[in-house]
Image (tube, rainbow, N blue to C red; front, side, top):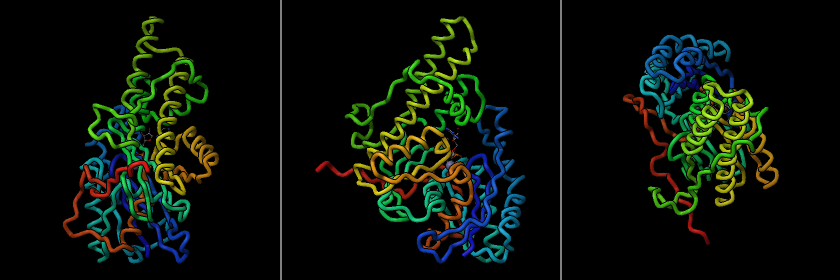
Length: 365
Ligand code: KG4
Ligand code: ZN
């Protein structure tokens, strides 16, 4: 089966061809993976402007799909089904992909397969590495999401933790903005951190694992929060500006703040992920989503995995940021399970991944 994947949930117009193989350990093979990034358009505004994003998707979608077919060496008639991100995301952006996918599937007389964006990020691990030992704990960490999923068997996703406020990537982008670094902030803060001293500006760890009187759900042990650390960076910036009587901080202050922020975020992500892995006796850990491109997160995750004797899987960069190959892969999984879309398939901006699968950690024995 050759699956055409389409992803337009935010600011990347992406199309890819992924085919199923006879190899049970590596069931999918990427034929092409094309991404048209809109980052240059949104950089001017310091963030994604939804209306500009959807207009650019309309401009780019035909060319991107045609390139995916050409690079994959496939003709339209070879496409067996079309997988598309149904949600979550920006509604105007999602609509471009969903409308295109439905039209293409209808014209080809093949099924359209709706995919949850986070199922795509999770499946990027299987796409890159083949079958991983189960149960697995998967951290999905991006600009829009920071969630922990337990995968007891392939294709089953149970939410066991999520951010209560900002996503980690969003916090990176906001911290970069308040230090005047530009957009998107993640890669910039990551690069500057390398020359910074994290110990110079210690930042607080938000603790949600102890009974939290204000928390809506006290049983949730693996939740995250990143708004506090972002505000703490802002406080340091203001303080230094006052102390020095300047608006632009010296380069070394910026590097040190970046390093401290990065250390705090990565520690928070990994402590929760490894704690969840111990709790659920996971046989492997996966880290997916745009922030998994972070060099400290990647290196530390692998180091701690070796220490804890739990293999850690991270997809290569082309599969960790938004792409359509992961959507095609999740589509192949859904199609094999008989899940295909109805003709009235529509974009769902706040789509929940398997609404009833939220699993509370079992009580301690
Ligand atoms: O998965 P993604 O491409 O899009 C969403 O679904 O959100 O993730 C984009 C996010 C942005 O917030 C970006 O700043 C962050 O990933 N990011 C990084 C790095 N590269 C991208 N964050 C930290 N370190 C990086 N190296
Ligand atoms: Zn994403």
